[in-house]
Image (tube, rainbow, N blue to C red; front, side, top):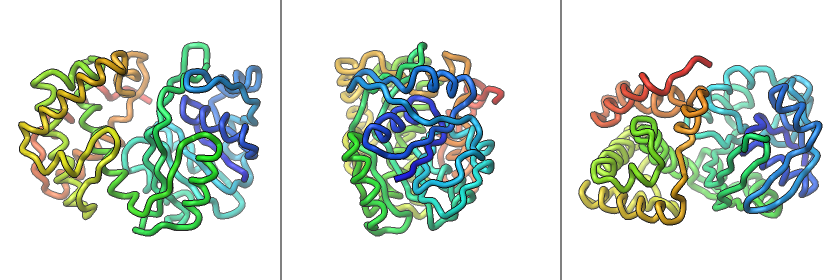
Amino acid sequence: MKIAILGAGALGSLFAAYLKRAGADVTLIARPARAAQIEREGVRVVGLSNLTERVSVTCDPQEVASADLAIVALKTQQSAGVLPQLKLSKPVVAFSLQNGVYKNSELAATFGAGQVLGAAAFTAAEMQADGTILFTLNEQLLLGERAPMLSERASTIAHFLDDAGLRSKAVDNIVPVEWSKYAVFVAMFCLAVITRQETHRFLSHPEGAAMMAALLREMALLAAAEGIGDLVDNKFFPMSKLLARPLAEISQWVRVFGAQMARHAPRHKVSALQDLERNRPTEYEETVGYAARRARVLGVPTSALDACAKLCATIAVRPV
């Protein structure tokens, strides 16, 4: 399988190393400095595994003439500048590891709507100062068609990724899965950026948990207005069960989850907070901002989201 991976940050590099080791013909599209480092040193992974792979890399998207699969691992704000530069010679199946749901519209504009798979990645890695990738979570990557069905191509790609060591599964309902992850991400983004705290701290605090509960409820209302239907459970947040409960019970569950994170992942920080601390642009516009804008367009009552979005806009927006 010939694979183009756009973005050589933590997840893009991780996927490139694993897929190269599995025998795929991988080309990684990176910024010049990162491309030069990969050419010198390869992609180095530590944490859940230890490996170094020599991966083909370029900093010019137009040099990738063909591929069977494109995996987008850019930050969401980078997509608009990179995707139009691709000049692939044949139809390519594509999916994105990015946060949010706006990503699929951007992929459809580049590859065609029929070539895009939805994806929700419960996979985590962090790039260290020396360029090494710290692999921290290999829970599951869920893939599926944008229409409710279990397709052969989604199953084939998921099996290939899973066999490579990146736990993956094809599902027949990827849209509510993506939205369920998106709801949690928006809530966590807001609280992390506003409080500037490790994740367990704002989740276990009574007021932080109450705000988290309110944001989850409002994101569920937005999903319903978008025609997504009910949100679904994942390993970390049992959304369908939670959202059927009163806000006080949701808040209490969030506090318990925060206490669990304090024991098992006390240093975890939401990616948006990591970006702020490193003075890098955040994904505000394409994630929290997008949700707030859609809520206004659809007339969804989202007072908590609206207030948090306004605060985040003053904190999290940086020049690209």
